[in-house]
Length: 117
Ligand code: FES
Image (cartoon, rainbow, N blue to C red):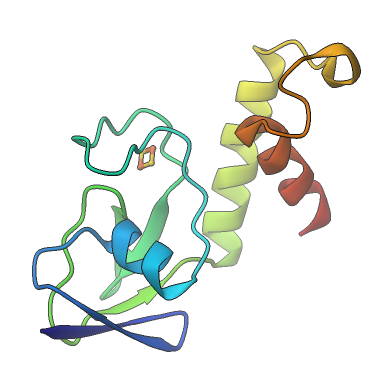
């Protein structure tokens, strides 16, 4: 059993487990659109970026190491996530009021989150 710290929260994990999986189990929210639990990371959305031991990594593809210190947010990470989200929104119809997925849409949730942070 290993321990990593995510945003100040100590989380137990298996060495080699993906940081995103650990965060989800520990109740730490990291935005992620393309990672499916149990699947192979595709690194398509790039929203799950975090800083781990001082390096920028994608949490869906970066493995936890005992003693690792992870920050899911910083002004730079927030700005980059916001820019990525804006690109997704530009390329996506935003007629949420008439969309069947409204209220259950990860992109919609993300866009709201970016506006409120
Ligand atoms: S969840 Fe999409 S790149 Fe990590």
